[in-house]
Structures are given as C-alpha cells and as structure tokens.
Length: 503
Ligand SMILES: Nc1ncnc2c1ncn2[C@@H]1O[C@H](COP(=O)(O)OP(=O)(O)OP(=O)(O)O)[C@@H](O)[C@H]1O
Ligand SMILES: [Mg+2]
Ligand SMILES: [Zn+2]
Image 1 (tube, helix red, strand yellow):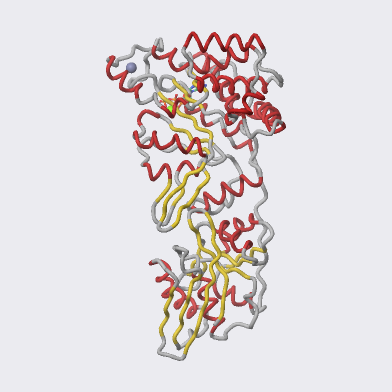
Image 2: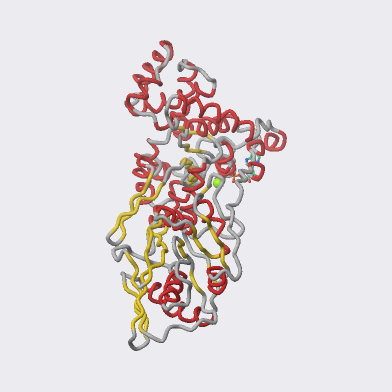
C-alpha cells in the first residue's frame, strides 16, 4: 500500500487528505472509498484516461483508493492528481520515495492536462501544516498557492510533466508568488467627485474609524460614486488580510489569470435582488457569500430598502460577530465576514422627498412604508448617516475637487495608528471599558452630549455611537481628549437621516 498527500476544501478552509492506494491481484477495477461525493467518483474515469494519455500502463489489477480521513466531506476534483500519482506509485511506476513530503493538487482532463481548482491557497496551507515541503499544482493557479509561504510550489501543465519531474527527466521550476502591487492609482479618486464636502468628510471619518455609513440622497446625486471611493481611503491590506481575502475569493472560484491574489480591498456591490444564500454563503459545495467576499473591504448595498427583508435582517448578526457560521452536512464552517458596510437609499420611492430640485410625487403612505424598511436594528448599528444632496450643474462642472484619495488615505493612516497605539483595531468597535477609558470627552463636551441625550431622548447605545464617532473625529485631529466641536459634529451624523427627509 502507498500513501500520497493531497488536500480538500471545506468552506474556505483546506484540510489534509491522505490518498492510500492498494493494488491486489484480482479482476481489474477501481474503487474509491472514504466518503467520496459524485465528483470524486467521476475522478476514477478521469484518472484512468489521463494515465493512459500520459503513455503509462494502467495496472491490470484491482485498485482500491482510500481517501482519509473518511469523516471529511470531499468535493471537487482537486484530488485527481494525487489519486493518479498514488496509483502509479502503488503499481511501481515511480521511484520509491519521490512522493515523500509532496502534496499533489489538481483536476485532470482526459488528455492528462492539469486544470486549475478552487481554493488552491487554502489547500496549500493545509499541506504545509501537514508537514509537506512541496506542493505540485496546476500551472495556471500555482502563483496563488505560493502565497502560503514556507512551502515550495511547483506549477505543472500536465500529469506527464509531473511524472517527468518526479523522475528527474525535466525539472519544473518553483513558482514565486506575484509581487504585491497595492496600486492605488488604478482606484477611482475622491477628487473626481465635485462638491459634496460633507459626504466626503463622512467618508474620511468612516475610513479612519471603521464606521458604517448610510447615504441618503436623490437619484444621480453621487451616492454610488462616493461609495466606490471608500476602498481607496482605507489602509493597504496587511499580509494576513491578503491571505484571508485571497482564500475566500479562491474558494469562490473567482480568481484566475491574470489575478492570482486579492491585494486590494474588495468592493462588493450585490444587486438588491440578491438571495440570502448569495449574501451569506451556502450551497453544495459551500460557496462564500457577498459578506465574506467583502471581508477586509467594503460591502455596498445600493437601494437598501429594495433588499429582501430576510436579507436585511440577516446582516445584523454578521455585523456584530464579523464572521458567518454556516451549517454543512456534519460540519460547521466559519467564514470571515469583517467589512465596512455602506448602505445607500433615496429618501422616498420617487427619490426627491425633502430635496428642493424636484417635487416629490409620492403619497404619505408609500413614503412611510419605504422609510419603515429603512428603520430597524441594522441601521441603528450604522454610525454615520450622511446626506448626499443633488449638486448644481455648475458645481458638478467646476465645483471644488477637494483632496485626492491618496492625501486622505495618509490622514486615515495616522488616525488608525493612534487607535492601534491604544490597543484597538478601530474606534467603531470599542465597547464598554475601552470606551470609558478612551472615549472620555472634556467637561464642555460632556455637557453637550448630556443635553443632546436629554433633548432627543438618545438611548445609551445611541450615545455610545456618538462617542465612538467623536473619538474618530478627535483622532483625525490628533487630539487626545474629545472636544465639544467633535461631539457636535458627531451628533450631526446621528440625526442626518431623520432631519433631511422627514422634517
Ligand atoms: N458631485 C459630483 N461630481 C461629479 N460627477 C458627479 C457628481 N455627482 C454625480 N455625478 C455624475 O453623475 C453620475 C451619477 O452618479 P451616481 O451613480 O453616483 O448617483 P447615485 O446617487 O448613486 O444615483 P442613484 O440614486 O440613481 O443610484 C456619476 O456617474 C457622475 O458622472
Ligand atoms: Mg447609485
Ligand atoms: Zn417621493
């Protein structure tokens, strides 16, 4: 019996799989055991054809392939290459020892070519953890696996090339991971947006403190334009974030040539017809949803009230936990889902309620119904409510450009550093004790907040939100204490929504 290493993808995580092959002198047939799903069973046919196409004789005896551990659900065709190598190894077609500490990953075409597989990076990480020093993977997606670091990655075009490599006939080169570009120049710039000074200020605060945003404004005012510019204000991804975001996109099958790694903050803008499964993830095999694809970046929900109620409500726990737990036969998968949420909405169905440029054509009841979909627990957790008014023609043509995204990003970086120095990820997440310790306003600021709480009947939670935003405003100014103007500004973002459309 021989053993060859491979890996399987469950959710976005890779798990090591041992492919054990036994060849016995019985009637020729091939059995694959170890909880194979349909695609794994189909693998027998592909492996047989690919071996024949590589000019090697398929053993004329009984071949039993066991995929261990049996309890692990295996799907996809990534095990093909390991099964083929295992069979050739067991039949004596390979030199002893050449498969030691090597993991084999990839789908085989009938003619022996290697096809890319989903989730290669996660599987390479699993192989590394299982003690492998080399992974042999399909040439086209090999650079993605190289992000794993600390394991040699060999890209191979076909089964035949793998055999020649193992025999030392020709040697396939090791693949380097693509260099990080972090190219901001290709992102849309904030200075494309003319005017909208207040909304731009809101974006800066959101980026600096990690706060969620609600944009309210009439059609064509620039809400989408503004939201698209948020990723460019955020700090560059850390190595760990690149790894996580790439694992998620790779598991969703969204990476390929020329892009092999996610090295820029994702911007996801699902349509309002998106299903709960599309948003949260699910299916068989399990695919990451929009909340996970937006991990480390921005999730933009345009026309938020048009989203299905279940979808809107399902987002709240995700926002709080910053991951999503999905049940899968016999296993629970946990996918990261830590994103900046930006929701956009019109003030009413026609879009013009409360804005002077056009008359609102909606009746009172339809406005109320529309706005009801906006209220509720999710929006309560969005710190910044910003108004995006329609700009005049002259403003759009010659209005102020303001700072570029690059300039704003530097200010964001400084503010983020202050938060890190205090031992926090970002202000949007400070709670309880940390907020008591770092969110202390000056005495005048405290009086102002007290008056607002009494006058507007703010809940304790609402008051904490104001404090968190004010903390970020103070960090942007590099102030240690929260001043009264910072509280006053934070309060305007709290009331923006109710003030503009309703009053
Ligand atoms: N402040 C602005 N500066 C420059 N161009 C603008 C501005 N506002 C809007 N535009 C132009 O108008 C177009 C429409 O803007 P955008 O799609 O962002 O509006 P919106 O608020 O998302 O509208 P809707 O409610 O219909 O989704 C943009 O592509 C841009 O060309
Ligand atoms: Mg829009
Ligand atoms: Zn209207």
